[in-house]
Image (cartoon, rainbow, N blue to C red; front, top):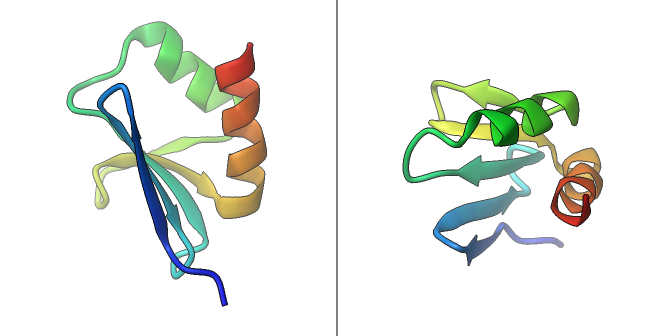
Amino acid sequence: NEETKETTINGVRIVENVEADRLQIFFDGIPAENIRKSLKSNGFRWSPSNGCWQSYLQSGKYKLNKIVLS
C-alpha cells in the first residue's frame, strides 16, 4: 500500500503520484532550456492539464536520478 509522496528541492516540487502512476515535477516557472531537453530525453513529457513534467512512476524515478546525477 504505497501512498503519494511529495518532496520540494530548491523550489521544485516532486510528486510520486501513486494513484496516477506518475512521477510529476512542478517548477515555479518555465525551466531552463537545458533542463527541458534533459527531461525530454529522459522520457518526461509536459502535461498541460496537470501543469507539470511527468513520466511513469517507476521509470521516472530511475530517470530522475540519472538527470540529477549527470
